[in-house]
Length: 108
Image (tube, rainbow, N blue to C red; front, side):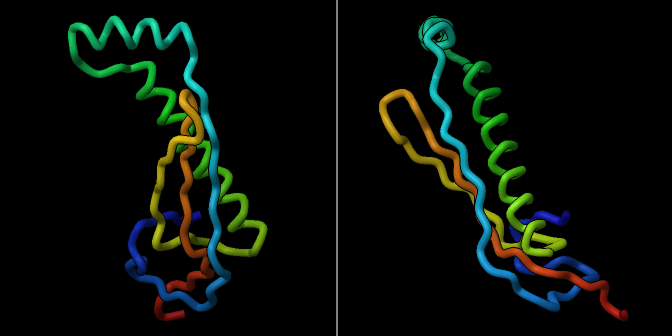
């Protein structure tokens, strides 16, 4: 499945639009990781535990979006974008959405 933030895919044309698809996940922080993050906050730098948590959340959201597009018969998702929001004090949502389409190689 082609997944791209652009509206077009080089060498292909959209032959059918199947509508908006999305995937989301809500992740809560872990108390033990919060302690490590607090210590890291004192000295500065990247909080790798949270970076990993958010990367895993993005991948899960993408997987869910791709599954939704595939169930509609799409072979690509264009105009993909991400959104993040707080759901509650220690939990965040990652939402990814795009347009499910059927692409065909140009010249066929």
